[in-house]
Length: 188
Length: 181
Image (cartoon, rainbow over all chains, first blue to last red; front, top):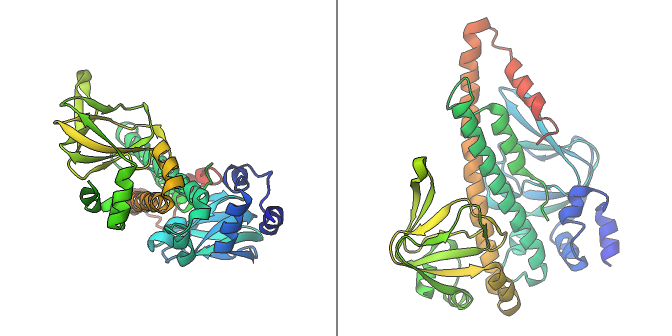
């Protein structure tokens, strides 16, 4: 059953990011994830999350690549690309705040789409069976927060000691934090 | 003790029963004035709730004098992420006065999963939402800084060439980012 689900979702064991969290899930955990969401095939250029808008679903990438971008002064800037195993728009889906970046399919994409209510159920006290899955998501969130805080602290430090404009944080430092906050690399 | 937890923001969604069950898995510890609770850089795997007294977080300052960066009074929570994901402590924490804390470790959380899975799930969920709240706070700060940076770039660019359509510095910085985030 687990093998069938794994094949259905299309998780690729060869992908290092997916391997760290998603392909290491037990059959019951993977089943729980798939039960909470829906597998969707999305054509290239599909918009998963629009900058400034609320997110109704978060996505776990099973196959393909997404592009994270931000529009500044009407210009589209690609910040990063993420492959299988990435978790997209989880923060915006859960806290109801706006997504600060846009996330688009860079190629044909297979994802597990999980709506807010179903996501909240995963973290509910009744979940039990998927405790390991929620633990993994919690660990991923904790490490993302630690990394974002660390990156911000380094950016502040650089702005104070090595910038031509002391106190003004550098745009690349800031944008890299944005990209990482809304498209998480899976953690083991 | 359970009454105290019910007034802590992290546990605001917990029922009285869940607070009581959580206390059952926690350990009471006492620290004298000036005693070290945890040390920066040392591996940590526990969360603490201040029951009585006060702690302070310190960082090394000039000439080996520690600078106090935060005070943790009754009801404050310290290190809630560490019982889920152990890591080196970012700051040293010492007792500002005679202090009693309730402590829960990763091992306690593991035991709780077996013996009280609802409370364990509630704790992980509460910590997860607190982490998201802080991450959003960092993200909002980044967004504000990025907008301020854009305004600064505008004012820096305009006097030099008067070409408002130029995005040279931005193109360069985002080019650096592609594929590296």
